[in-house]
Image 1: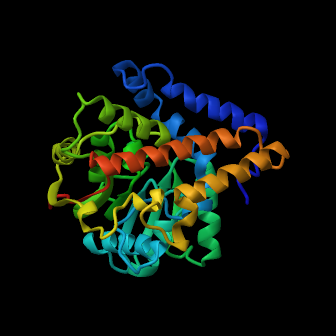
Image 2: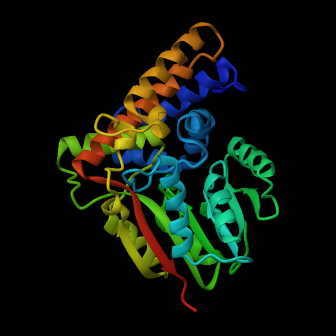
Image 3: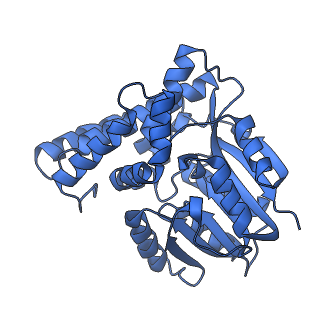
Length: 336
């Protein structure tokens, strides 16, 4: 179990404490939200330094949700979800495509194989970029994929560079959806298409409901989010930057099995998602506790996993309440 194996106990403890500071006190206050927005890049890079190994251990190389279908392994559902987005933005061989917030490159590798498009992955986290490059070279896909270190709020590309762009559950980390959507608009060629899977609060979310508010804030803390916004707010941001909306749909409605069951597992589970389920997380937490006690895992590893366990439980609650979606699909086009 290679979790944080390259980090010292001091590094893990310091980063875990630094991250937690963004959510101390009244984490839902306007002051605290503005603090997170002002430090969103630092906060999220620290978060992924800590959690990337855990994500890969439990989730694989594609860190996102998807519609889940009976009789279909979860990992295949993940790939199907990526192919669906690729088809929605009509990727073809030879197209120049930007992956905004590419993680360790799992979606980029699957989409490149499927479409033949030439993909540039953009990510400001050095640890993930290093992993993404290594895994892509091992897959012999370096002729189709490259990775750049940079901030998708200030993308290091000229105007009108890419034929298409996409972001898979990544732009939720931005301090401003309008800013990151605007960057996608800027770097796309006229007629280019932007496909997004966005995290958002649904119409069922009631900010005056204490339970709704608590769950929203807990999801933000567990997943390094400056502030979750509603479906309507995200749609308006897309329109404000100039996109023509081709499709806006909450893909939760397509899932035969509730999307959050992969984290819950009490009503449904499969061997392919066991590590993600509540039982799998409990087993992992016990193992990490032992490894930390034996000084095999760095001190602070258990604290990091506790953050992720809390995130999972609150995502399940948000899903059951129907107040949150991790797969709001936007297909948007830059006018010619």
